[in-house]
Length: 127
Image 1 (tube, helix red, strand yellow):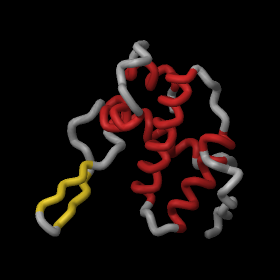
Image 2 (cartoon, helix red, strand yellow):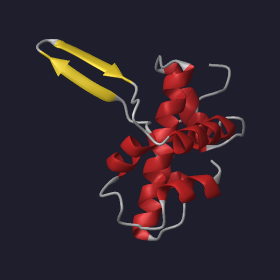
Image 3 (cartoon, one colour):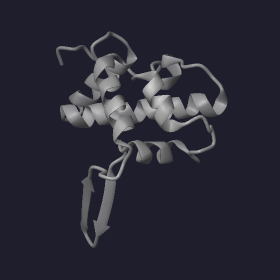
């Protein structure tokens, strides 16, 4: 992700978003679920910060080009049946949650904690 763009769009108030879900909704990466009776529909969010959304998806797309935890996470989602856009959105959601956690707690990014690498087995790119 373009760090300057993302932090510029989020702002410098660390308590602006009560939790990671609020940040994800603001960025537009969280899906909208509507339920009526027995039908449930999940659609993409149309009211969002477009600049943050674009920067996040570009960052998620760029991160799958390098070996590491984000690429393994993306391929794991693809192996579970997600299409490209859904797997990217899920990766972007994960990255926003990690960013929110780091900003709130003052901790540095740790891919082992962020992607639960102790539990997950890596997936090959050919899968």
